[in-house]
Length: 156
Image (tube, rainbow, N blue to C red; front, side, top):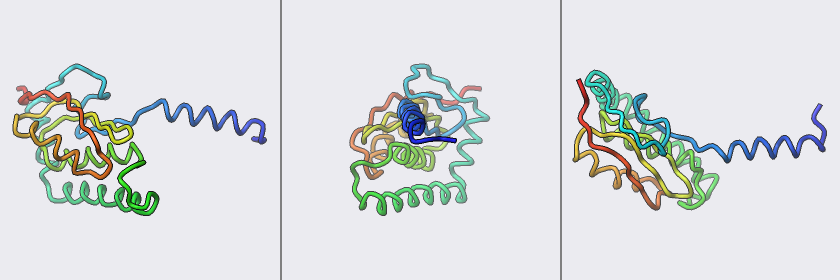
């Protein structure tokens, strides 16, 4: 049985553990596992084609846009619709959804901390690279975007 004396230290440990982790939202399974990674893993042609087909499907785009709307609605209720003090995981997830829906065949990882978004990974074209900043900033609560993304066409 948890008593008040044991509850506070256990809760503190859980809270400390949760704040020490930063959630990484990925546009594909080939995306980096961390935004701190400096390695560029170019997806295979087959994998890039599969990711592109998935991201371009109407059903997937509808799912991604629904995810963004749901998180925005939750923010409107919990945070009075303000762009500040948004949940970092929600912001990262919304940016990931926006990038996945608009940059097919990309392999990107996204983290967010107090409005600062970090995007790493690869995109197949310079045109897709050029769209990252604007797409990310279209999400409420994003103030800055750091992009560590390589332009790397899929490998055979």
